[in-house]
Length: 241
Ligand SMILES: Nc1ncnc2c1ncn2[C@@H]1O[C@H](COP(=O)(O)OP(=O)(O)O)[C@@H](O)[C@H]1O
Ligand SMILES: [Mg+2]
Image 1 (cartoon, rainbow, N blue to C red):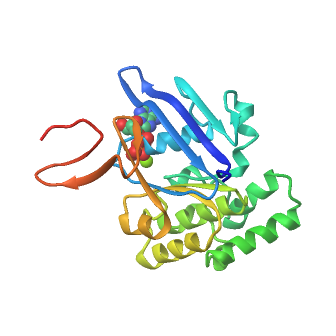
Image 2: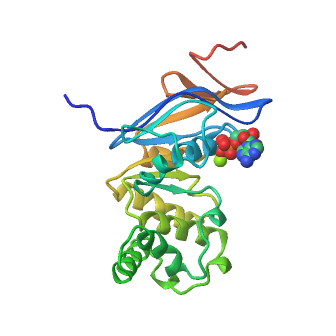
């Protein structure tokens, strides 16, 4: 049986922002086409850092990152694959930079060489898909946090990526909008990794939940989170009670 195409392969990745505190330590991770993966782990575990390493926004101190079977080293390696992976930033203000919503959503397709007409057509379709048609001419910086998050998702989807990396997509959204996002994701035939603290959301949208601990990624069967007098992870991770 043919295994699905490998999209992300990280081997022995070390990363730190400063020498004293490594964030990722000897991290291995594989992600295949069709995978729908959830990551749930405490704040500060390195989840966002992981996404930024996959996108080449950060570079590992050591270890290797391969995307779509290609070794990613220089900036131009990432430039060649970035449009195929859509990153929804944890903070929508990192994503949106155009005056109006339609300009922000059509920026990606235009940047990828689509005609203005085609870019606007894709953007309108994407906004419609997310129930955001009425937002086209809204001023981006005046949107609420939740609205910005949704528009950010539109900017990601309008690039028609093959893979989505969603960093806390429900943060700041009301229940109705959270339900919309859940429905939209379930409807999409696309590979994705979702970082979220919402277990029900991950159960509804993903087939496996991973966690991060001590700079590494663990699968369900290695680790599960349980709570008694203190919360910690256990499994194959050595620990004491
Ligand atoms: N730009 C940065 N400079 C220094 N430290 C950072 C920076 N970004 C994140 N960190 C630190 O790295 C750790 C992991 O951060 P992050 O990847 O954002 O975790 P998570 O997304 O799991 O909450 C945290 O302790 C955070 O404070
Ligand atoms: Mg984060």
